[in-house]
Image 1 (cartoon, rainbow, N blue to C red):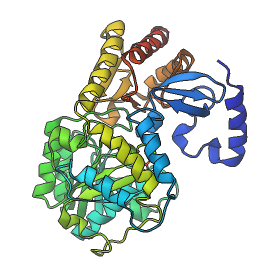
Image 2 (cartoon, protein in one colour):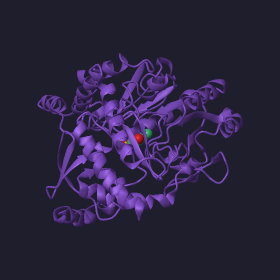
Image 3 (cartoon, rainbow, N blue to C red):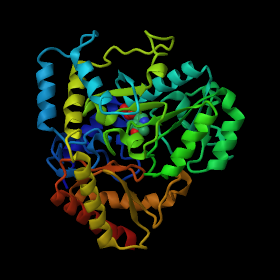
Length: 429
Ligand SMILES: *Cc1c(COP(=O)(O)O)cnc(C)c1O
């Protein structure tokens, strides 16, 4: 496989950007070789700068639920673009996207648009603190919430602990306001909430944790977390930046029918352009400026071009049968691969809706600590086969893959063959 142009671009990029990239997950730190530079995408495919073609399962890490260069999204962007890009004043496109979401979502009354998932979470946390007048936040080990200072925190050695920062540059004072609990452990969570409830503003969770493998939780556990929050006056924040509009239009809240107090969105909501959002009841959203005392602002927030990409994307998602068809594709893909591999070979696919994760384990994994770090060596080997077979995924074994509406059944069968061929070589060695 030719890589000369990508390699050349990467050499230049290294002189310009830390590690040659503008987001560390793009670096090939956990796999062999150096990053592939993408030239264009169309439907289920992307092409790199050397002209190699891949079936794409990264889909920009989730936003492209319709695949690349969807004609209606492209047309909507162009049409809006012709009237200018941003005004820093209200436009009708904001109303349109706001109505589209709120009229089809039973879990939030009001929404505020921002420009990334990180910004959505950061703002949601501030709102939770402002609304409750409390300081601490509890998160779960294995959930990612963007690069918000107080949430780049790992568990310490005990069960529920004040965390230790997972990045340099985060003051201890911030870390001391964050508790970290293991997913799935009711006793540990109960003890922590009882101990800290007087200063605990919120519990934040990815209801479908999909940033550290795919750690699917039991509905019953999520209901337990909901009830624990309610009985202790703690707000529940669902970080649905990945799961929102992905497992259904109403995201995980809709799938599990659980009412969180605050929901954050990102990724799909902008249809490939930078949009994030947070939403809640009228009452909680009333704490946000200019209605209330919690300040949050954004120069490019709700800009019409990004709004129009979001509108065009979500209109497709709202078509009858959209999610059923996407789900069918995912099931076809998983079944076709697992039938070839068979059980008890140290490999399984975890899947929910159109999100999947290749777990080098025979059993279901639902806690970060259950992931065998040594098994990531398998992914590293597999990744070389994935690329050379003509398939693209995020370059890390901890990352999930995304199936889009653009994937044909033929694409999925082909991808399952590429994976099968790679896996037979990797698992046998
Ligand atoms: C991607 C992601 C974020 C961060 O979103 P950005 O747009 O990358 O800032 C936050 N939370 C979850 C659950 C995510 O998947």
